Image (cartoon, rainbow, N blue to C red; front, side, top):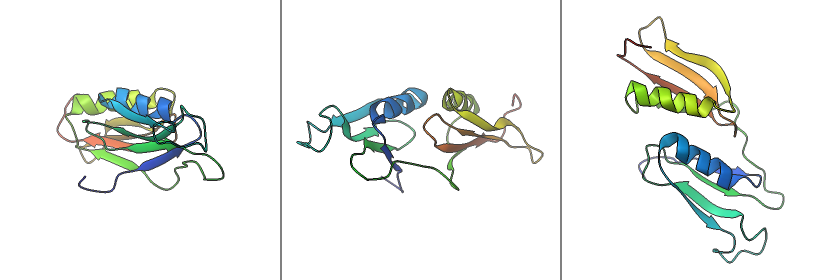
Length: 136
């Protein structure tokens, strides 16, 4: 790893969420269950540790048990500015918006670059943008 990687605690839907992110970013999600980790503090099929593999976005996650708080995102965005070609970034934006909420449409801004914001169905806030594409 080259930098900080988000590790999200989910309320029983880590498998669904990490699979969703894998589908959006075109990479598989590697999922390990409580049973695989010999954990008995939750359902055997709950995700004890999961992550995206071989894709453009690094993301970890797990299901939580007990009184550990689940993920909430306030006052923070994950930025994907210029991290892929414009067509790919548009595809990611559309995928993350499915079941989520568009905060600002992905469009050309007065300074010439294009960007937009979306909060996906699991609550992650994304800033996606690029420069140099005349079709935005």
